[in-house]
Image 1 (cartoon, rainbow, N blue to C red):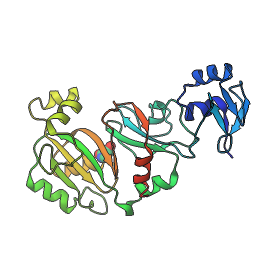
Image 2 (image 1 turned 90 degrees about the horizontal axis):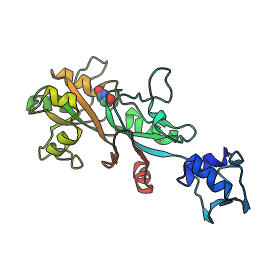
Image 3 (image 1 turned 135 degrees about the vertical axis):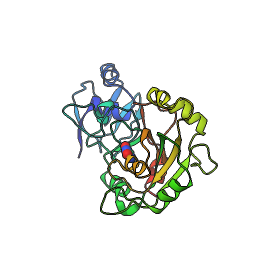
Image 4 (image 1 turned 45 degrees about the vertical axis):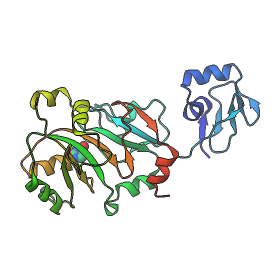
Length: 264
Ligand code: URA
């Protein structure tokens, strides 16, 4: 049983804001199990109640899956005393929502938020080797030597070397198929700080790793003598960042995205 206020339920299932939900309720447009209900604070069993808005049945999903384009400057946590968190960006967070893994405060890009612990475990488990692809702007060029070092695995100061990773300069033919063209990427994601640091050539690369160690990309770059000036995650497993989402925006995953992610 999942007891929930009716206005919150409507906000989660009918695409309404809480104030719109209150208006709909006031006007008698909402029925619960066949009876018109007008009070927003009415508690319902979200898993069992048949709720209609203008006669259309709402679908309550047990789990929520949101794709967030994490902006820079927010922390990947559910709560924090000082900093704005990714959960603060969500208007009506479903109960138990949390970020699947972490991006650094200054990293932007794809972050999945869910309350489906089993899926999160599948995606984060070190044994599963789920690919995570990042676009990074480095402080200088990298060539075959660095690519080979990434492919072999690097000593980044941990007990074990990193697993093999792929480093591909943006714009090369073997850049990830879903990655935007180097020029487009550099234009669209290049922040002011990068433009200032490297006006003519921002040294964009795509890096795909199979793990999710602390500051992994930055430490791998450092191991080959480079600094990361800008970092954006563009995919995780089968899930790709929707380029219609601006930093700070989010959307529910589609049925298909959920099914593919779960390997169904
Ligand atoms: N690697 C990093 O260094 N930072 C991130 O946020 C993600 C991967």
